[in-house]
Length: 332
Ligand SMILES: [Zn+2]
Image 1 (cartoon, rainbow, N blue to C red):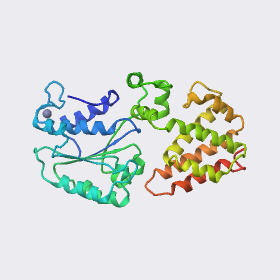
Image 2: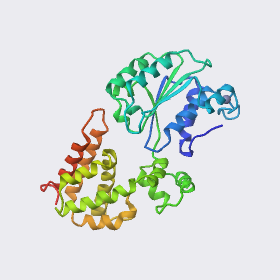
Image 3: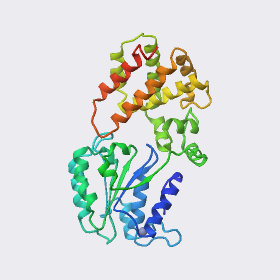
């Protein structure tokens, strides 16, 4: 019984090899783009590790033993998962302390005691520090799975104590086919959605559910207003703030990359926002290449800062980005 996504086979094989050669570490950091399915992978791996009678043909969890039944019922005593109480919020230190005590307990089945932290980058410094001792001196049966699509947000002390398994963006034909089979009523093609999602097929699906794709229209419209000096930058920053910092910065980078591509190469076939090519073309004519490149660098810098371990005020970052776009020295 195996329940991973088709683009996760390589990482699965790697994990199985580690297991067969008896060199599984106490902590693994699973990294990959948003929407690559890290949680499902980690849970499937946990089920496999805890299974008491693996399928002899393929070493997968059997789905029938006591352990697999407890797993399927969602109450396996040797598996725990913590996540923030609300999406996008931080993990509480009490959650992490509880988890540390949990992995120190004796295992119920005599196998591993597995804890999944989803996402690990939702730990602030104090919380991460609390976990550090467990990573340095792991209890003998403990096994921690840390999941992150922005591992740079994790302190280096945490990262350096985990073995890392990376998932690359899923852009292969099989990934496109998987997405096609799972798309319901989309104006955009699977390829276009996958490109917009940054190679995370589950993220590509979720783009259709929330307003993410509409955000791009707001950003483009405001960039156009600003290029005509026809607006109040403070008001624009306040509007963008309601869209969420990470969304704003990551969509801006994609939009500016497309603008640069249009300006420099006149290449309309390989745009990330292929469905917006007319609007992008319309905007790019009033912009200057040097200003675009500087703006890209600036937004990238702000993105790296905002996803780093330090806490920044989201509104002031957005204001800086808007002001940078409007700076007459660099932007036409
Ligand atoms: Zn089993």
